[in-house]
Length: 129
Image 1: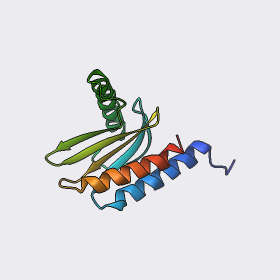
Image 2: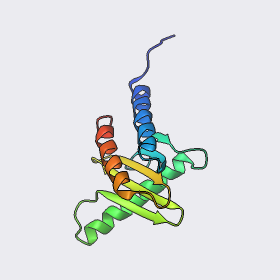
Image 3: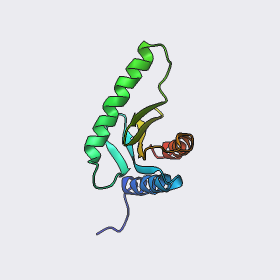
Image 4: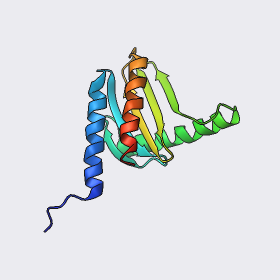
């Protein structure tokens, strides 16, 4: 039996650690995940009420439609997608070509701080994708 940790397991641990720090950074972020652009969850800190596979798939679909809308309207390359609902905000940030950071925040959150933390976190995550 080997005691070695696979590279994928170590990356997942690192990503979860980064997400945990993100969730605590402002006090407003309730859930976060790193996915591939096609919706595969790489790491998540979502809580029990959010199904990770479903969340990843929805983020991928939203991102694909948003990219197309940005292109069709001449807005350039998509950087992020913001969804504001009555019970909070969902922010989806593109990380390079194949990575995505998605997070859910409380209503009336400080969006400036969340954007700042999300961008910083996306830079850190890009090293693992």
